Image 1 (cartoon, one colour):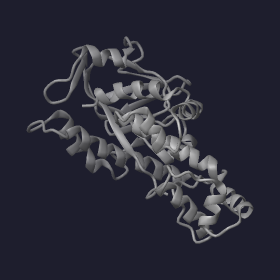
Image 2: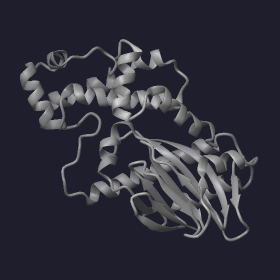
Image 3: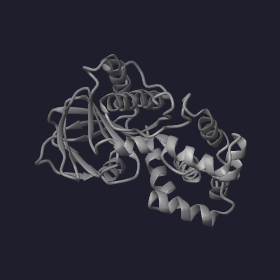
Length: 306
């Protein structure tokens, strides 16, 4: 399952925050994270959860919940977008904010997870991983060097930091899978000897997701009758074939919208839709906002990634 998960991290900001400081992040569909590299912070989720974070802690908000981060409960809180607007990054790609008190060093961002969405939905709204004690601590010092720009700042540092964040999320999921005693969704093409025909069908969907598939066409591709294919697919995957394909197409479209300037018509075609209107309606049902609004919201995040 871990091999099948495709993760892409986007770093919003690398920040050095002096007490007192506080910021708010609103709810969105994307999983968010905060990695504390130095100092301490209090994270308060809108649902009432609260936790104190120290150096080496990775906080994952798997459902994209709105939340507040600050040095203590009395510090003034501002919207993170406004803070980033008013405090541009320095030559090393760092954002500095707050007072003259003890410093907290943060890396903040979000995860694009695509087909792992169903797995993330099963995580608690707030999941904290202590990277310093679980074997990932060896990543912290080189990451700290990158964030602080020791030596000299190089182009591509943000991309390297994002890749390290990918590793951290994968480890969060590993801990969850190890601890889980319930049934879990099949993520990506199932590599299973129990029903190789269904595994082949799911692989076809992932390899050729924009093809004009029908249930009957998929059944023919794997040498099954339509009725038998539907029953066996639902048993193996937990949903109907076309519902699975629609989820896959829309997840890929969301990733394209968030990371490219491709025309909407092109994104719709790549997602297997004949026209923008039907694509927009399906996308809005799934993500709660139309494609254009989704792109604008996530493009702002990409433009301030450093």
